[in-house]
Length: 138
Image: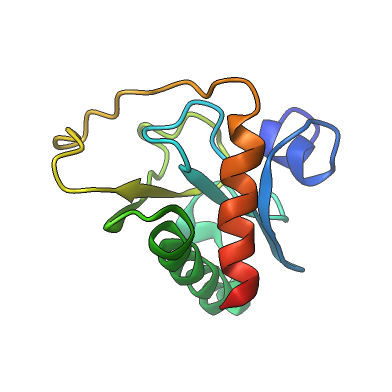
């Protein structure tokens, strides 16, 4: 879809710090992370919400999400992760995307208020490389 930012990232028309590339999915760092290392998993095909995801992609999508959640712990040293999908309401980009956010006890995240952070110069590349390296070692 021409005006979709995630489709533009998938098509490599916009830059992104990619951590996972699969035939049907792409995962990359969120530009405005809740915590550094916050990843978005998207289907390569333009799909708006989870109910729109083709049945033959559901298992692969969840499998990629599991691997990313594991990478938060193994690659970033997080104690766990927060995994979420918004459908229409609070969906800032109308393209299905699953958030995988590294979590540590006492990190300050409360409820559904997601304060955003910024990366310092060079940090996105480092976080993406650490997550990607953990994915390839699994």
